[in-house]
Image (cartoon, rainbow, N blue to C red):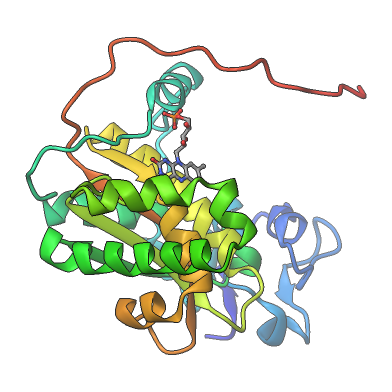
Length: 275
Ligand SMILES: Cc1cc2nc3c(=O)[nH]c(=O)nc-3n(C[C@H](O)[C@H](O)[C@H](O)COP(=O)(O)O)c2cc1C
């Protein structure tokens, strides 16, 4: 098969595949012409699969995506606005966790869902590192706190900005103010050579956080950890990321000790309508 194959007996030449192709590499003129790949198609195709996703007749198949492996969408099966809104509004950052590991199947299911989050040019270059167990996480927290001590010693502006002396004092008193004693940490990384890696990672983790909440898990964006990653080589080395990767962002994960009973207030959205 070339880049894609059109089943002529099924294709009704509606042109929807050509209309949705983000790269404009499907040639189609009118109801008399079959869609076909442009000369540049093999080079430019980003394998997003929109052509086969939108075809109303199941007539188009990408070489890289056999149709029978692309599930049909059942109308009404996706979350409606009310349930999605309830999930987004009731999700909270979790900072107090049960001393209990997170089941691998739960984490894998959440990661599997995030594969469908958008990535720049559909590059899908992210890597997930799941670290479970305090014996693995405590040394990472200590690296973070070493970075904080360094910032304080150098009177670096972030020391005051983030109140690092207080964070260090909490660690010295035996607490974990960096990862909140979470049993699990998820680090999403991407190639340093790919400029969209950090945005892709944040988008993926935003989906992951919602997926985790829908399964009764609690998560929290690991901001201190992330800043330390960007400034403290010993922490990066300890993470042992794939060659050439930099962390995009990281998230704590675990079973919440407390369940929220109410939704706290948030500011009104600031919107400029030009409609
Ligand atoms: C980019 C980012 C970094 C964050 N870093 C931390 C962190 O290091 N530690 C922490 O306890 N919470 C962290 N948070 C959680 C925020 O404090 C939290 O989202 C905010 O207070 C709103 O609460 P909510 O998430 O429960 O709605 C972070 C959130 C974001 C979006």
